[in-house]
Image 1 (cartoon, rainbow, N blue to C red):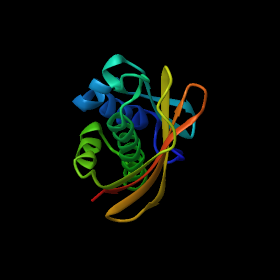
Image 2 (image 1 turned 60 degrees about the vertical axis):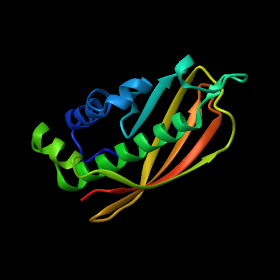
Image 3 (image 1 turned 90 degrees about the vertical axis):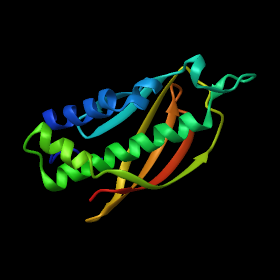
Image 4 (image 1 turned 90 degrees about the horizontal axis):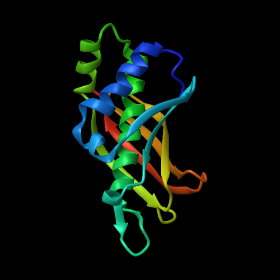
Length: 155
């Protein structure tokens, strides 16, 4: 997703909001990173608490879907910020209060085996009330673990 219409400071504030203000994201250990000027990704490390199948040691499906949902919500939120502009952190928080997941579809493509994971997303369409996003989760070997499509209320 391109972030050219949003200031770097606003992008950092949005990332901080998702990392620090949402308790469940802290439980998952999510970090929002900006590896390039036009993309963001959500990264996290494998921990024992995130295991779903104890014999294999792979990620729990709920962790996978949660991370994809976070990424979809984040790119939808950035679409709001790009479209409407941001004047202050309070303005950003007001726009965040309008965000909510309407629908989420996850396709699990292979077991979540790895030590670190990164999820990326982009907005397919952002209308006046709903944004639709596509998300992917990869491990450190760049194996595609899961993909998702989400619809998010943005008004």
